[in-house]
Amino acid sequence: MVSRVIPVEDFDLVIFGATGDLAHRKILPGLYRRFIAGQIPETAQIIGAARTRQDDATFREQVRAAVAEFGGVAADEPQLDAFLSLIGYVPIDATGEGGWSELKSRVRPGAVHAFYFSVAPSLFGDIAQRLAGHGIADANSRIVVEKPFGRDLESARALNATLAQHFTEEQIYRIDHYLGKETVQNLMAVRFANILFEPLWKAEYVDHVQITVAETVGVAGRGSYYDKSGAIRDMVQNHMMQLLCLIAMEPPYHFDPNAVRDEKLKVIRALEPVGPDDIVRGQYQANGDGTSYIEDAENPDSRTESYVAMKVRIANWRWQGTPFYLRTGKKLRARTSEIAITFKEPPHSIFDEGVPKADQLVIRLQPNEGMNLKVMIKEPGPGGMRLVQVPLDMTFAEALGADGADVPDAYERLIMDVIRGNQTLFMRGDEVEAAWAWTDPIIQAWENGKARPEPYDAGSSGPEEALRLLHRDNRRWREIRA
Ligand code: BG6
Image (cartoon, rainbow, N blue to C red):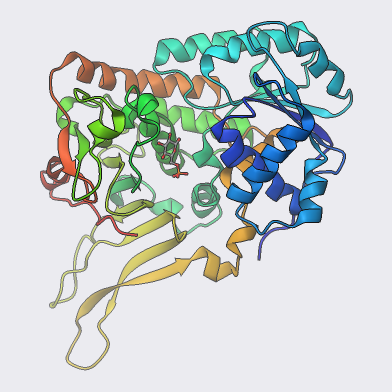
């Protein structure tokens, strides 16, 4: 059971950086999947724009190959040909004048215009200025920008200011692809479409929260980017922060872009600074045949973290006294993302045998999306009243009979939201800046120090020190397993 597909309006989508990795792996295959789902009108135009000099036909063949490799659906030639007929290409010079008048002649008046900046942030200003200067973009156009949105508060502010010279906040769609994930949106549905959880969703009843995003991949192939970022910039400032916000925020008055983003912003602003005792950084080392981080990053002196765990506190009424433990890392033992909410133990036990354990709600984001609520019951059978904890386990796909192929990937959903003009799942400029304002001192303290990240074995659960972060609070991490 997957909700019905509502076609979007006629549109022209221009992808700057159309020959790049993101366009080939995610954007173009995602558009194809939406096309075959019947969501994209047959009159729409998808125009690739990049420096390479080539014609429409050559680019279409690249798109055909990208769809075959990354589309995740069996190639259906007639449908693929129909999709390719929407595709065009304009060679463009982002920092010069070449190609802009041709682009202008291709973009149709009357259609929704979206411009996807799948390029280095250093080009955002040049492209924005030329789109506006050549009259290609107008007050109804939308632009889509990718992470990294800055590498600190100052650069994020500068990017926001650059874009603001030509576009209003309502026209800017800052992508955090975690917000496009089906189950991440489910966090809001679980919290705000049920009466069951919300009354307990506060420090009085929640002992602590664990947010884990564990990956098995390393950084080989993208070491030069990653080594300048590390896990904090790459994952915590954006994806983990968004998960934290959705778990911790107050109910917005409506599922409306600014109402939702206002509430997320309040959470970010309420985050307490994280001191050195509350954070552990790790760097993977080779284990068996694999490579180490420093080999993958090709930087023998690197102090960049491929793993981070931290204890975060939110200074507001709802969460006073409930820690949020966050951890994310590369080359860990399993790929799994989950949020675990551990409730407090009942204040008094009436049973002689077996102390009631704390209930726990685990929301699995990927893979195998679902929810698991651990509750106490009586152990079946004779022999008195003994307690046992059992899981009420639900896998969303099974429960809803959803076919994975029908569930849009994050990029597909987000691009369709751009065309619809819905900013709910995109980060607002003030949100991004607030996230950097909190992250900056953590990064600066590290950069000013001399310490090295703690080594951990590839394929393990991360550095030992991360265990201590919870042990000293008499808590333990959940096991990382698929
Ligand atoms: C990206 C990061 O934003 O998210 C990557 O740059 C990371 O380092 C990726 O691997 C994780 O995304 P997902 O969708 O695979 O969980």
